[in-house]
Length: 382
Image 1 (tube, helix red, strand yellow):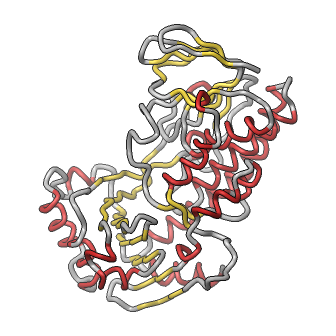
Image 2 (tube, one colour):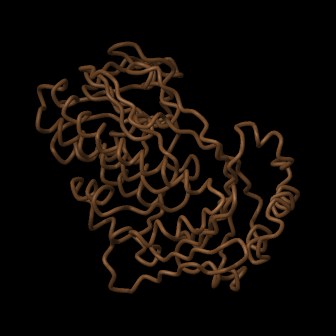
C-alpha cells in the first residue's frame, strides 16, 4: 500500500488515521512493523506545538502489551520510572493512611512515564512521512477528509483517533461527551527538589493523594523535576464561572484556591502556594459507559473518541491497546477491512466497557463524603 499527499491538492491514503495521540500512533506503528502503510493526520503544527501533559502509569496487561506488539517495550523500559509507582494516601487533616514505596527490583507492573516521552518514542519509530502535521479536519464525507487549509485526502478506511471532541465519531454515533460533575484545576511546581526541597520530600517520588469531602488534592512527580498538582472539585458544570477563581490572574487564583481548602492541613495549601503561574481549568467529561455502534466497513474509532473515561488511569492504556489490536486485526485481514473492523470492535467494546465501569466506580468513590477511607479500602483490596 502506498500513500501520497500535498498540502494544496487531494491526497490518497488507503488507511487514514485522524489524530497523532498515543492510540493513533500505536496503530500506525503496528501497521508499519507489519508492512502496511497508513497516514496520520494531526492538527497540531509539530510534535512540540503544545505540552503533552504529565505522567501516565502504563499497565503491564494493556498499555505495555501494546508497546510489546509495537516492538517498543525496550524503549519504554528506558524511559519508564519504576519509582513513580510510589503512593502516599492522606486524609485532609494530614493523617497518613497508606504509604507504598517501590523496591528497586520491583516488577514494572504500573511504572510512570512522561506522556511526551512516550509520544516521542512512538513518533520516532515511524517514517517521517507517516505523520502529516498541520492537518485540521474541517469535515468528513464518506471516503474523503476535508482539511481547514483547503486540501483533502481520500481513504478506504478511516480511523478516528481524534480525542474527546472527535469529528469522526459523528459518522458512527450521535453520542457526545457529557459533564461528570467534576472540575479540575491543574497547577505545578517546577524543579521542586531545588526550589522547595521540603515539599519535594513530602510528596516523595511518585503519587501523593488527599481525597476529601467533595474535593481532593493530588501531586505527581514528573520526570523533569516538575510536580503536577491537581485540585478536583465535584461541582456543577458551570462552577468555573461561579467559583470566584480569577484564572487571568495566577497569583489571585492561587489565593482563591487556598481559600477553598481552608481547614486542610497547611502542608497541602503550601503546595498550592508554591505553584507557578500555570493555572488551568479543566472540566471532566465522559462518553456513556458501554457505548457501541453498528459496525461500518470503512470507519472506526479508538481511544477517547470511542470511550472517553474519567482520568483515573485507564484511558491512555485503553487507547494504546486499541491501536495495537486494531493494527493486528488489519494485519490479519489486509484485504478485508470490514472483517478487521468487526473483529477489533467486538473485542474493544467488551474490554473498554469493563474499564469504563471501573473508572466510573472510582470516580463515584472520589465524590463520596468518606472518599479517603473508601480509596484506602479500594487499594487494600488490590
